[in-house]
Length: 404
Ligand SMILES: [Zn+2]
Image 1 (cartoon, protein in one colour):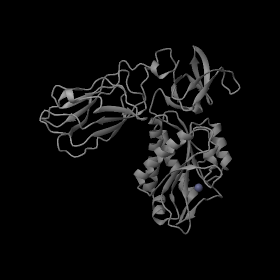
Image 2: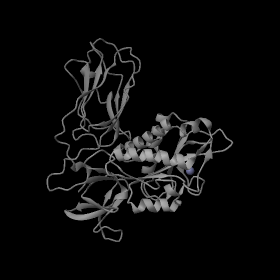
Image 3: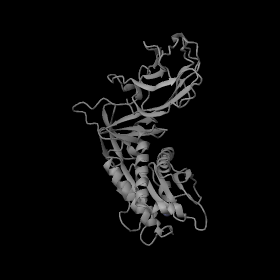
């Protein structure tokens, strides 16, 4: 009942936006058409060539104007055509629109001909990511509060909220589910017209109103605390840096509509298991642990973000979250990029808080307190703001991204 195809995109106006003015002409060098996200699923792209150029329409084929999905399959689109002025090729969206929250590539091959006889010097490619498909707003009497996209292979539909309840059916990865309310971890849905329940941990949720972070229960976990200072070097203490940066992340997430909750709000100590239990008590949707690195007597420096490779659930989602946060930290703080790392069970990086959390979860190492240049950033008010901006932006980008 909730399959993708059932959602009709009917009344969305076509937004015709010029792709890139003057992308190509004979003897131009390569122009990067760049990337775009949050694209309307019904968008018709316009590929504009230079003023005065006239395209030979018959040279347009399904080989030189191609849209591919992220698995490399060609997308079935209506025939592209040349606009009246002769210099713009319109690439229509698929009849039923692109899939929401997916990445596509539009290729413009160099075999397009022009009346002047000139040739394109290079082919062009544009990557774009579509916005999640827009649901018709709930009609009066409808009480949909949220919708979810299933992130696990299968998701059991239960008669009552609880693992012990009979399963009455199942959804599969990518299915869209309308949600009428939450009871702890259980999302209330309608299945064959009857109330039923699914576990929300296996869906990426989005509220019907507000931005993508609206009502997301995000646990921000400042590592260490009290008698456990964590790393100590260059006049700083890890527990203080973690807490201060976490508070700043917390404020930003709240401003963006999220239900952000911190495992500790002061210089107190929680055991690792208590942090996970705390998240569980709050029926969390996401877990982000903030740490600061140290390696005394070495020149190690930079930031790294861990997701866990040995989790029972949401492993891929956790790594997608790690990617999104990490790329923002590197971009905003310009700190050395040590990459996203996948924790291996039984090794030094088998971190308890990301192994034992069922939701997407990550552990961020902001930088090395033992490295003087990193420490300068970690102890700077300005850079702490940049770190917080980066983590909040990364979380937002995770929610905007497609289901892997
Ligand atoms: Zn730490």
